Length: 344
Image (cartoon, rainbow, N blue to C red; front, side, top):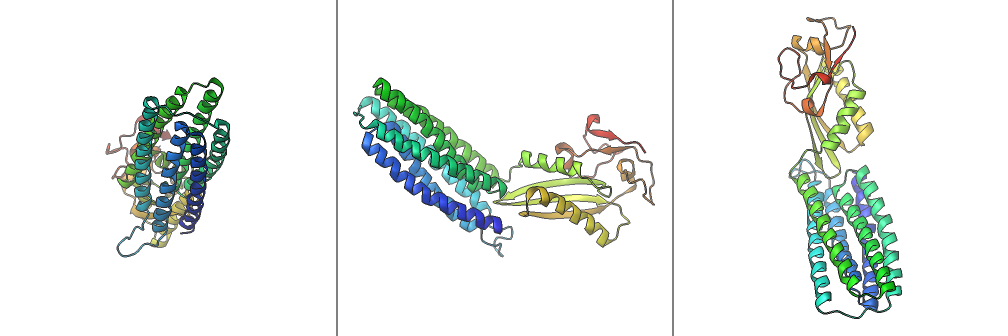
């Protein structure tokens, strides 16, 4: 809940700053009549709308879970990101339309130096705000905040490119450069809008985040405890800033309930140390079977039925299976380079 409130406060600043920057860019446009600067101003309209949509979605996401939403309200962030991406794409289309019109009906450009300075100032502010949003969004696993940050930094890159084009126009006096710059960056904005929508749809559909899963698997392998004989059926779902992790942990069958729970607590503490407190676990503990002996390196085991042979390294391919790993059954599709020989 602390991270959700932090996301909300950051988004409030994003929304407020975006309104100020929008006003500055329209001052620059009406001073110069440059279609390139209009490109930047139109994208800033999207920034303002997206800022307030993101603010509302983070307000919803910060609400505690209830009877109707037992997993919380975090999915609202993905809906916000999808809307923002759609608006970015529409802005790109409008920019292309106005750029083409500038070729058909050229307009004289004036006070270009004033416009360049004004737009440059907005670029610096946008970059800093975007960097901060991405940093806090990554820390708190907030899709909406990261989408806002990426959008702001894309806006910055767009502005830098537009400034470069305006400088070229300023020194060459070739007015057609203004329209070309607008077309180039309008196309880039459409691509960015598509990527934001694609990412948000992946979150709504609970698409597996292979990068996060990879980090988790490496962490578990590096700090694997002796009593963690096997881990399988691992799943990770993102609900806004909260990660829900399900898995089956195999421990020695003779551990009592409290001892088995201690192993689960150790697993949870390890993951939360790496991923933060906004992680929820549903860990099912399994008792080991004689077929687990060949992959169990617990040498002091008092009930061992078979000699230890090899330890199976957990990988993205084998840890997500809904079955225990053994050497004899052939249920694990792990190639031999994933098997680690351990001396007894």
